[in-house]
Amino acid sequence: MTKAEENAPKGNKVLDWIEKMGNKLPHPFWMFVWITIFVVLISFITSFLGVQATDPATGEVVKAQNLLSGDGLRRFLQEMVTNFAHFAPLGLVLVMLMGVSVAEKSGLLSLVMRNLAFSVPKKIVLPVIFVIGACGNIGSDAGVVIVPPIAALIFSQMGLHPVAGLVAGYAGATAGFTANFFIAGTDVLLAGISTEVTSKIQGVGEVSATANWYFMIVSTILLGLGGAFVVTRYTIPRTRRFAMGDHQELATPDTHKVTDDERKGLRRAGYAALVIIAVVALLTIPNWGPLRNQETGGIVPSPFLRGLVPILFFLFAIPGYFFGKATGSIKHPDDVIKYMGQGMKDLSGYIVLMLVVAQFINFFNWSRLDAILAINGADFLQSTGLTGPFMFTLYMMLVAFINIFIGSGSAKWAIFAPVFIPMLAQLGFTPAFVQLMYRVGDSITNCVSPLYVYFPLLIGWIRQYDKKVGIGTVVSLLVPYAVVLFFMWLILLFVWFWLDLPIGVGEGIFL
Image (cartoon, rainbow, N blue to C red):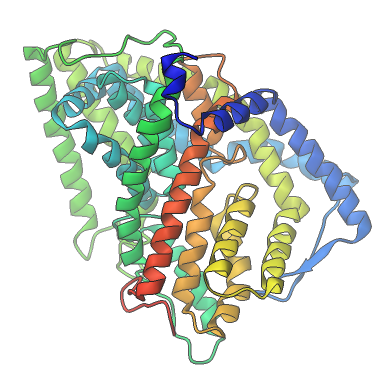
């Protein structure tokens, strides 16, 4: 046994097995093709058998729909192109990364990240990456798109493999999706569904957007510490064997000195960024701001948050242009177009994959199997009759399991809320606490689900460094985050429960 093997984490054998078995799976494109065919066949069987479930929110009987039929064929042919063209994550990724490509190819991002990496202690950088990833959900899925490549740059400048940064940034933005220092769109969306349910329960008030805020602030810090532990203990050691592809060698503090042109470029890029931020602030902060919610006057939700990706596009592309002009990496405006095109070239595999992913998600929705699965899962948990911590744990595990198959958190909560809010209210628990537990389960398995819409994007990024990396390898890198962070979140929840601390503004655990 080698010294490296002796010092390897004890969980490596399990992760090695996950990697070995997972890598036997076909390319993600074919995997989604076969899963889609499986959904079609299951829809035929369940429709023939009359499988159905009653939606607790509306009382509607949800019946399995047969996709292996004339109607199913016509719908597929008529909507295949629309499914792909209107697939929200595709547009989000393309727009975001075109702006990032300008900042990256011009050299701006590399220089900024290198200076950041070598000026901040390593012990602080790693938790900060996870905190930024978690807080990225204030712009919906923007954090999943932007944090991993930036983390890869930071890791590279720290002398670590960029793949470790990609994995860490992705885990922080997905497993910690619901945590935040700020009130985000997720808080408003889930609180609205909860309030709709509580309005029908006598003696239970509405659930505000700040109902889980205190717990989520502490969760963000906790996830940062837990994520840094997993990076150091598992991710960095397991990514040392990866190839570097066509990318540069890992940097050291003396690899590159900042030149006069780069300093000038940084100043110009900084001025450009300040102007953009000032304009956005002027359009958002005043009560008359056009980027505020025109009906409520608030910021959550608002055109500002819904338009965060375009804003970030300009925040990367414009400073990147000014930096490139100063340093010579951009000699003509057409170079900007070239850099955007290079960014799209790197995403070509992801774009192809999204063609079949978009069909799978819509097929699953058309069949109504997603709703039936969630409703029956909720019925099962209700039938166990468990209470207290055991019930909390089983509840969150059920949500986490279903989350692997159904990505939409609001869709699942619309099914779970009418069941569990009244049920747990009878046991003396507030709707806000029920919602909080749901959010933990709904976040933790995002990172390990191959069906998560951004998982193929992560594989594409990693294969830019090592083209032989398979699904099993990627999942084995992410499993420690899901396991460790779930246990840490569970412990935090139990401590909060036993101390009976307020979980949000004016909200506690008990009615």
